Length: 151
Image 1 (cartoon, helix red, strand yellow):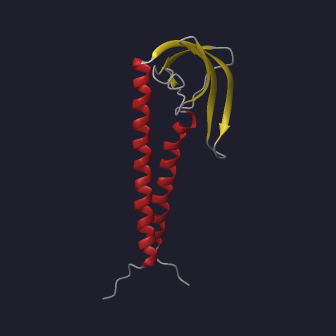
Image 2 (cartoon, one colour):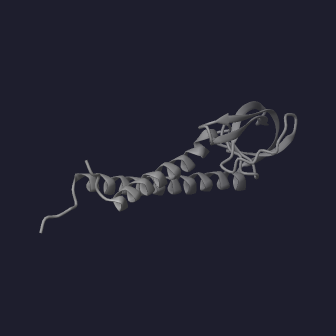
Image 3 (cartoon, helix red, strand yellow):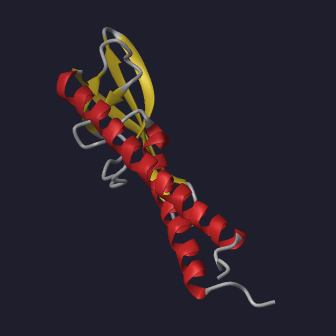
C-alpha cells in the first residue's frame, strides 16, 4: 500500500512545527522581558519622570503601540527615553508625572510600575511572534485537512 503522505504534507507539517517554535519563542521572550522589568521595578532607583511626548506607533494596519517619551533625572544626569508597554494602555498625557524605576548600572534602562519600559518596541515582538506562529499552525492544519490539491 503506497503512502499518501507526500512532499506537500511534509512541508505543511514542517510549517506547523516552525509555527509552534515561534509561539514558544514569543512566550519565552515575554517571560524574560517581564522578569527583567519586574526586577527593575522592584529594586531600581526611584525617581519621577515627566511625559514629554505621546505617540501611537503603527506596527501593522491592525496593530499599534503607544509610546511615551519621558524625561527623568538619575544621579544628577537628565535622561530622555522612549517607553512602551506590552499592555498598550497609555493613559498618560504630555506634562504628566510618573514613577520611574531606573537600573542603577544602566540608567538608560528604566521602567514604571504601570508596565512601561525602555525596551520600547521590543515589548511588541513576543505578540508578533505568537501571532505569526499561530498563523503558521492554523493555515497548514486547515490545508492538511482539505487534502491534496486536484490539478
